[in-house]
Length: 220
Image 1 (cartoon, rainbow, N blue to C red):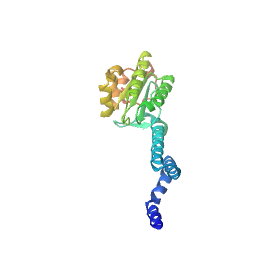
Image 2 (image 1 turned 180 degrees about the vertical axis):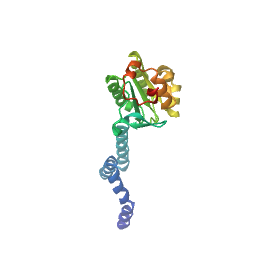
Image 3 (image 1 turned 30 degrees about the horizontal axis):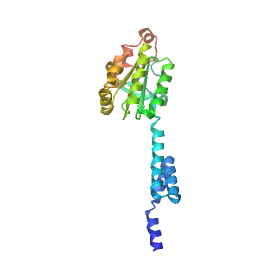
Image 4 (image 1 turned 45 degrees about the horizontal axis):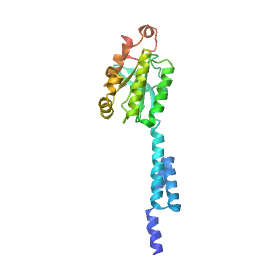
């Protein structure tokens, strides 16, 4: 009977999967190791709880810092492609900072996003455009962050803009009335319409003396 139990237990071990976890994700390997060790010293149900809680901690740690990338357009013919500024050595507009947020804007990520926006503002930018197509979820804390920072930029003569919102985020902002507090005129369907409208609000003397000319509108 003991031999049969050991054989069954051995067959339950997926060695290939364990090796794949070791190769792919160190955080999941830690969860695996902690859960396994917990089963040796604790009741099985408590070991499972520990594994689930540890997985949740790693998940929240990862999602609390969504990827924020500065982007700028590269114009090829009549096509405007937005590329990572750092990865492609692109000079951005000195008046309009364009960033893309890849991740959810919830209470856990609000501090990280707020800090990034503050740093951009401290560098002299009064106009900031957020490309939000990668923003899958937003909650009250995230929406209030956008509204409050928008008010701050408006008081300094600038504005915060949003574009390419997915339906879930757009409906949440509209249902909560945050679109009115934020400014419906500063929420755009896509990047092209957003830049076309924002360009009109930039300081013209600064544009006339600028040699970056990354927007199609700069050539007009």
